[in-house]
Amino acid sequence: MKKLAVFASGNGSNFAAIVEATRDGRLPGVEVALLICDKPNAYVNERAAHLGIPTFTFDPKAFADKAAFEAVIVEKLQAHDISLVVLAGYMRLVGTVLLGAYEGRIINLHPSLLPAFTGKDAIGQALAYGVKVTGVTVHFVDAGLDTGPIIAQLPVAVEQGDTADSLAARIHQVEHQLLIEVIGKLAKGKIEANGRLVRELA
Ligand code: GAR
Image 1 (spheres, rainbow, N blue to C red):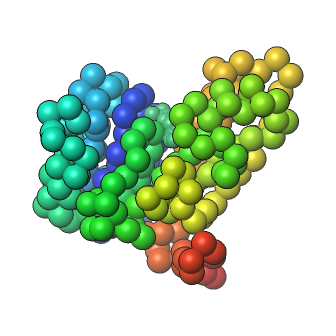
Image 2: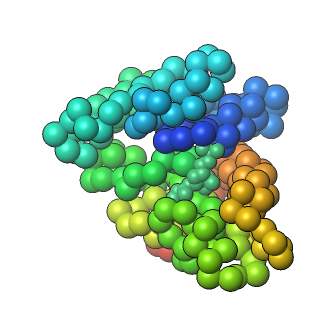
């Protein structure tokens, strides 16, 4: 069994989509063993309780710095025997402590076709820029802001009259599909990274 930890800061629709996929047969051999959340009031905590997923929720302000809370996170990951970390709406840069323990085993979901529109509100940034196509990226995490090697991307067309909400709804649908596909391939050892270049093995 491959044990995953999902990190999230907000709504948690991707977290729920992953859990569902592990339970309905789309992700055989994969279990979501832990939710890590940096926002005590985030809705994702309720989703985890409802789905029966163990949760570690913390308030970053209660720690001296990022290294201090990441040291506790790494302890939790190891205690739960986690082999893959999935950042799904975790709105925080990963620091040296977590990267040191899990580099190459942390992936991030981002709602744009990277390298365009990094950081917060990528959907709003894409709308404001006026691009006609945006999309979804899943990439390995490095120390930068959405800069790690790209594993998979899918486009989403921007339609005339789109609002941030209407575009986000279509992006979320694509996210739920792409993230699950990538997790499945990683769990089967079908993804190989060589520097920036990531390829899928047959
Ligand atoms: C997703 O759109 C994800 O791509 C984005 O946060 C949203 C979380 O949605 N992540 C980032 O912007 C990271 N830079 P969810 O909480 O409903 O899964």
